[in-house]
Length: 148
Image 1: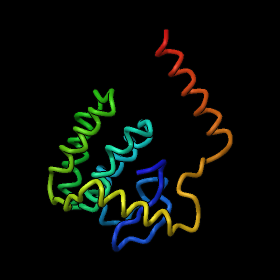
Image 2: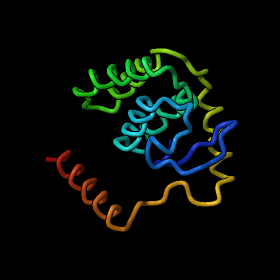
Image 3: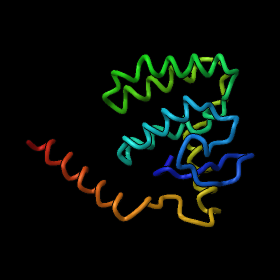
Image 4: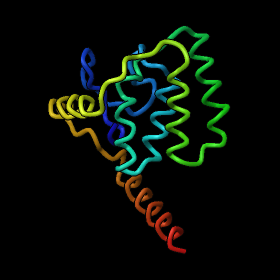
């Protein structure tokens, strides 16, 4: 996952993904929502830990299973404080119901690079100049708090 890039796995053409509803219907909504939240809270090095999960998002199941996944995520996410905790919750949610095949991280990176190379537009476009400015302020505040 890159900064809210797009989908690009065999069988899925590239398209921008800015919200869960942009995902193909075969993708689990609760799991995608959590993965996107983790992507948003992650620093660039942490995002690399999300790559193995990308190919496992296409695991939508019955309505009942999707409700169980959402309830599982909600029950644990209230105490979510770190990226690592979020990864554990994501792994647990993926264990509920139908399982998508896991793909080795190197294969995922190769596939993602291939798709990004075929994209007709940039995969990491800031939503707006104002958003970029606010994000830089928040990062500066976070760094200042870490040194205090």
